[in-house]
Length: 356
Image 1 (cartoon, helix red, strand yellow):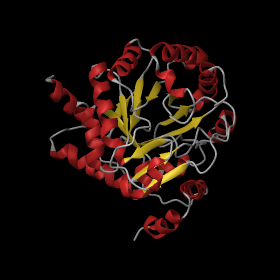
Image 2 (image 1 turned 90 degrees about the vertical axis):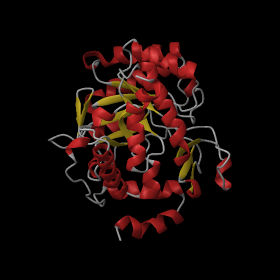
Image 3 (image 1 turned 30 degrees about the horizontal axis):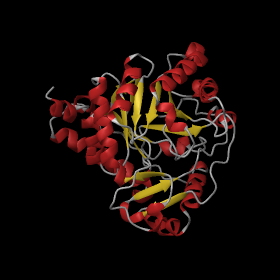
Image 4 (image 1 turned 135 degrees about the horizontal axis):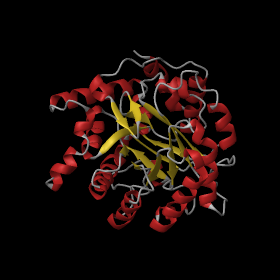
């Protein structure tokens, strides 16, 4: 029996946010397992000029303040995404604000970007190992709830954190900050990205991604794809949590407000991913997020158009051993279907569906 199996029943007796905070504290003190092992060569890829030993990354939200990147890489992730980080510290929404739906292997959260702020995160990440991190490290940027100028917030955080990041993400898709999702509008988004690029100065070639919502219609997705085609975006992360609720969702927490993640998100998020791959013609690298808890699901995201995948809620129910299992299963799927590399599989299901 692994360590997670021993402690999981205790963690699940605690409120979800308390369990998460204790887990992160233990990782930050070096108490986490070291599960990283050499990855199968078939899992390696190069995206945005960055080398990924495997495509399985940790989604933003788990380590919002960059307290445990070394321990998280030790679990076997190919890359990490820290954040969302806001320019100024903020507490987020009132508690309780995280709810488990164990029957659906799902979580609802309305955290509202709790963050220690960009200065604290920059100080902490400035003490990176002398040899660098084992894989690419991204920083996910948010705006302060009371800020009247969203573009200024994203620009300030980007300028402060770019030297510490391998890529940056503009998060305009959390459902828990009032008005944030309206920033996915084509004109609003283009204006924010222009301000961010200007703020980056000499680092303006840093890969810049946008994380989008799963609840957008095709016209909205087409607008975002057009912004990407203009060269303003180097990649898209599909998707954030959803405000929709499937009819099958049950339990006392199902009616809670916030963003739903986990297994119910897998199919809608993967549909958005496939649509973006089609709309961008496969020319913009995509990161698939939402409901990944097996190698088969990671493979489905990749065949739908993802060059990389991320997970978070899967860890709540599967524990740290899930990462290695996903990688092994994914390598088996690729080999079974005759792919010589992960890159060969990207978008193949979407291309087949469109007759390409």
